[in-house]
Image 1 (cartoon, rainbow, N blue to C red):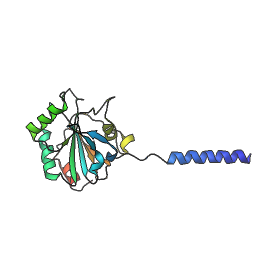
Image 2: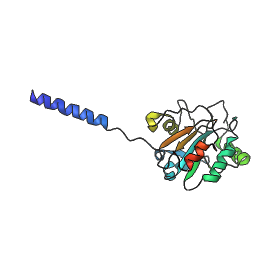
Image 3: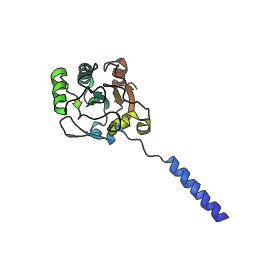
Image 4: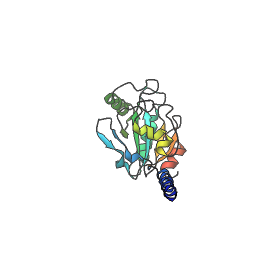
Length: 185
């Protein structure tokens, strides 16, 4: 009886210990991607910077936001902040072209100098792993935030943690975003 009680106690203690030890949440620094030029990009290279991750499209009503994104980048980009753009064709087939055409479009029409990445999927069965982290509370530890349309903006703090989301309609130059970059939460 004592041996059975001891075995049961050990089993319960082991179960409780394993339940209380959860895997650490991922950060932005756990991800890698390809740039629009096909080069490897390790997000751990952004340690210490606040980052805005935005899904883009060339044929969207929000496409003119490239102008404000570039202005935001020119004003605040550098050692403490950057923008990463991910072209995606998930909404209304508004980004149908290949990466080289997207790059030419962004550069020629909007003078984009912030880092653009290779086209990915931001929703659905083929969703990129980074966007799974950005959109699911079980992955980011903060909030479910499915991508609703092009130019949804995710805010990542200087420690690589998910910090917020700004929907497509919100200007990249909104007080909310600018105040966050300048030191707010």
